[in-house]
Image 1 (cartoon, rainbow, N blue to C red):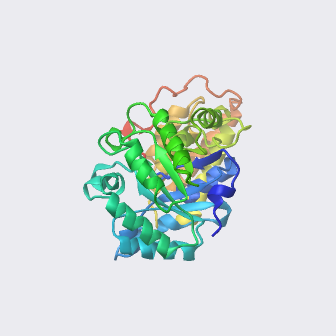
Image 2 (cartoon, one colour):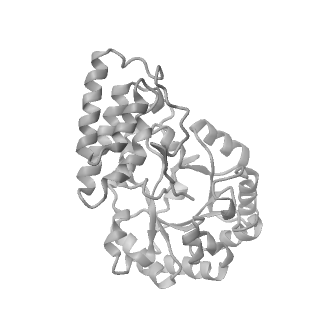
Image 3 (tube, one colour):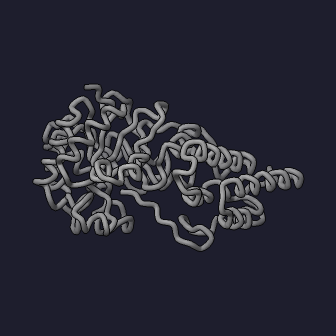
Length: 354
């Protein structure tokens, strides 16, 4: 078995799996701007893969070989479907499998999935065993939290460290806290210390509110983790994983909008009519920000009903902007950075992540 978790140089820098965000299109845009060491897919239901609704699920597993090493993240609670899913993922050519034991979304948790598994260790053992038996050639990892309704770091993570896994990513909050409250990196450090005391050859990755590669270095140095997983920070800077690159927010208007046009074209060529255009709208603030007229342009883009309308709008704006010779003035006049993250034209957009 080739275990990329141990062969890659430290510290590991990983893009987190995010629902309706980290599909193959977005991963390829990130790849263009700065490669993380490891990519993850969106969350994929093992039950959905083997149901009548398979076609509504399987697109989550589409990837380009340039994205490797890439890990398929799965969730569910049926051991048989984990076994079958593992076989399927090996056939697809994934480099690893990850089990989601941390997503705190209420409708998922109510059905006993994801972070609810923290309170069901016997089932967890079955799921891990079924996955390993289905694809013994692939390294297996788990992404989880410090507890479900209360802090349970040593008991829960100690249990996982004694399972047949190769890597453990720990988000420094309990499930009940969603993405609120301070991330307890000192608790993640306890997992590292526990791993060492147990003499287990398992990679420990920390996760939670890290926004730059300099912060990655600091977390590794301070808390001893082997690497760091970053998620929401990618919305602030597509060049997050490129240490020497200028952040997207500081780039010229033409660079920002050209990259958005590339994103739209890749979305169309990859998904055609199989994914709705509205999914793209959550990405507009990545690009249309911090320049004269950004607020108005973004509002107009959000009102568009087709990708062609958006492309026409952006190309027209670029022509007008260039004629005014304002391209060298990012951040002036109508700078809209005061808008809170995740808002599109006043509508809240949730980014589902561990």
